[in-house]
Length: 407
Image (cartoon, rainbow, N blue to C red; front, side, top):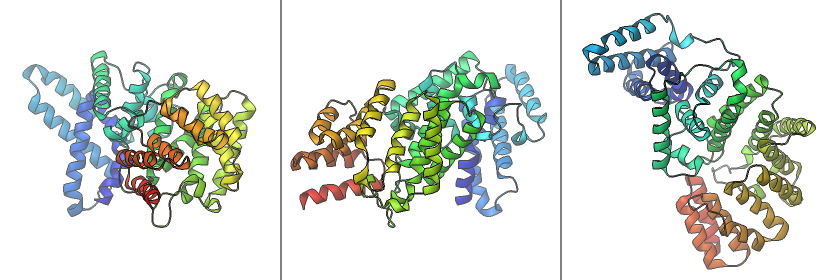
């Protein structure tokens, strides 16, 4: 089972992209690949891991798709079926077929391919996250702060538009990459965000997603070194990743930033991230990812939590809020505001934010109420945060905080 899971995370997106190219239908491709992995779960424990797991998955998915097509096709569709089978037969090894493209990293190529400009930006990002296989529909819905049913409808509409408009899912040429960059950056950012604070499960962090997001962003920076926002995202991820060893205790419990043992922070990653941030500053073209990276760099500069330059953090959040206004940015700014002007000022900001199902909003509000000595309101806010928290590590931390109030 572990082998199948590893292959799923590594190859799902690639297999789906191959099937999409030849079937011309995203739903059919996903269904065929899922059937193949179901077969792998049943067979591999007995037969062992095949010599080429990725090739086995693609071949099995192809056969399942063709079998289903034969069962469901009419006499008038036989010619189309013959063309489909011919296309497959012309590819000696489909999993090794690579189109001419400036993007050499295979998974990054898939991200660029999925971020088609004919789709609205949210649909690009949501569909890419789905097809990459790293995130489920509920996880994507959490990332976009929308109900699961709403996200499911968006995905259905995006797939329908691709099918009805005949949008080709081909690897873009080098000249087309800048037009797709915004969606690609959003995808990589959200993959890392899900890994950094998992939306479900027992553990706080999904290290596999964090590592993949960092790897893909490094590849993107090599591909497009003159794009400041690419470097900004890379700096942000490196600095965020440098804190990972201190974010949980030996037992896996969540440790907030203010209580982390900063000697555990990864200094080489910090140095890399700060160098990237300095490179961004020299360009003088600040964007949202660069500003977030600069905020992370300020935290990395502080040897202790008490030495954090919160006024600088607040000023950077002010700039970020002017460039990319959103309730989440406003919430993060309120955390800095509490350190500069006090919890009452921050609480007034948070009370006005429309983030009803967003766990960090309830958690920050509970902490501010605690600091103001409003114990009963704080307890109720902690209860809300516990109810909406995504994973067990977050729930356990919030429960401890609430229990401390009662003690």
